[in-house]
Amino acid sequence: MEYGLKFVIVVVLCATFGEASGGHRCLAGSEPFVCILQRFDYNPGDDIPLFALSPGVKSIRFIEPIFNLHDSQAIIHMYDRVFHQQLNSPLAVELTGSYTTVLEIPDNLEYADFSDNSLERLHVPLNRSYALRYLDLNSNYRLNIQNISLLVNLETLHLSTCNIETLPVNMFENLNRLAHLTLAANSIHKIDLDWFPMSLKLLRLDQNFMAEFHFSGTTRLPLLEDLNIEYNDLTELNIRALLETAPKLRLFSIGRNPLKRAELNGIVDELNQRNIAYYNMEDIGDRECTDGEHYFRGVCMPASVFELSWVEKVKIGGFIVVLVALVVGIAFGAMFLRKRFQPS
Image 1 (tube, rainbow, N blue to C red):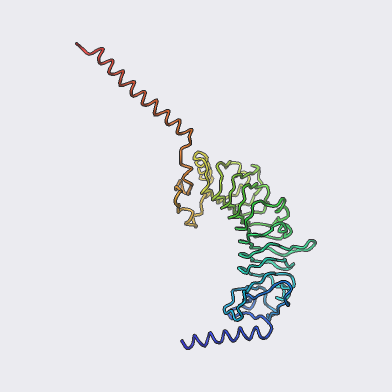
Image 2: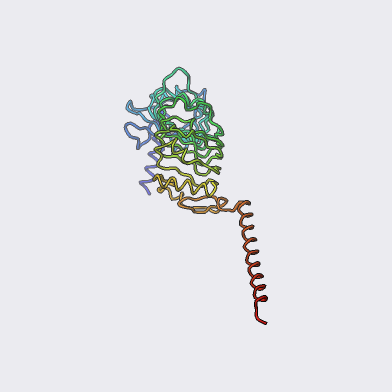
């Protein structure tokens, strides 16, 4: 108990000293090349913050303050070039959950995680070269994604849960190194695989409202191995044309779509024949069906898939009527013949 109290006192004193000295310092536990900093209040127009960083620091990670001594909100509202330069221009920055609204991409930044913020604008000035290879913007609900097309060195881009309804025209035209793209949990209704760069290896489109899914049927995504379209509104899919578009596909997650039963059977048969998985064996959620779902050939599908259409119901009803009429006719015929040929 006494040791714990001393530790808390030391941490508080260190934090107080760090602020009093006018420079934000790396927390204990930071590595030589990685600095962990507590978030603080910063608004456009405020005095430029000062940092006490060793020259070897290449990566900055911001975290919630351990002790909020001044009852601040610890919100860094804007991350711009000046702020970046004050951090000695690191190659990697992680600033999440800070309600940050503005992000200006520095030229030298290679790794950026600004997920779970309130980003509205992404400043990417023209006529500059950007080193950025990894960008995580998940869970930024008001984000304008137009300028992302200027980040031509991107290899990984996360745009899930960003309330995206449509993708800007030619958004991916210059992203010829992009290998991993996630667009899950948005509000996209229509997708055309021709929009995406040929370099893609992974594409997540699950948890949208996609009712239209177009592809040319010619080799357009020669490297694509993992495609997820679960939890959408697709009722039909030309699986052979899709496999011609993405000939190296190894995992094609199709569950939770209201596909017609005959369509689903044909898709699963084709995938099995080509040894392509259609659910993620490492994700137990892919095999645990919820209420309103049925487990069918390895995937969970909406119960509506297995309900009879009105045409099928009419056909079955007609068959039953004919069958009953046939049975009744046979019975009456037998009775008539018995009476006719029964000896007196």
